[in-house]
Length: 356
Image (tube, rainbow, N blue to C red; front, side):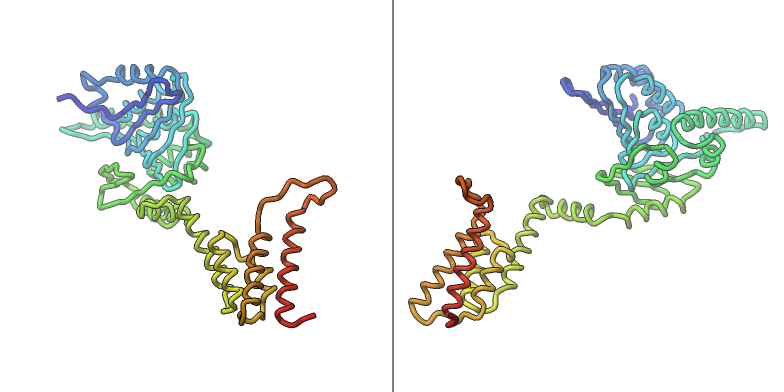
């Protein structure tokens, strides 16, 4: 039975960019299968033809020798290589990430380095175990060489981090030099159920040494979701367009502010109703409301006509179109006209009050 590849290239004709997806375990079975070999990966890479390449990683690691081979091929690729950690970059997957010209990591993604390990099946004598120990030490040294080329740490510091099985947040990975930038927009969800780690729908058995550190990072990532992210997630769940949602919120606020100015005065309430329908704001109608404050409701047709005049003046004075100034006329003609309109309303209101 042929093994499924653990990589996938997305390389559309006519596109200046290509993508390489490394999701799930880096499996030695498919890497060294008779049909799927390192040569096949290299052939797929060559078909990208030097395009800018984005390598998207969400992997718990896997076979270190397969990872080293991919690292070497990517380092030799002529196009610009941008690594993006889509969820988790752990163990052998970190070797591949180091091949990038730049590495981006979301704030709540996971990055982990540790010592290489080997599964033992069958019987081993002292000499056999010593050979295995020597092989693991040599493997660790090759990994350290990769890390040291990218990071701001000494090999001794990096070796200690591997001994400790170090889980890192994006901030810590950036500080240590494993990544170059934090992607604030891309969101990662991670959970740990018993010994199963699930990151953006990629699950893997996780018999980690430093479980407490991993749990702390996951919990911190959940608590640090900002208001913008939370709003976006809620909008997505409700099927809303965030931009339209913001516009709707602004419109509701505008109407609420206008309605708050209503005081039972027929002139005031009529102006506010007109302002709501015309898209005006509370600031637009404030001068007119002040002008008619204290004016009683009309008792005859004459006073009703004054109400009409006030409404017409308010509408005219609120126009936002600025006429082209004629020779000798002031540049702020619209502002002058609006001031005159307000004065006319004030005078009309004063006459209704009996003022001279």
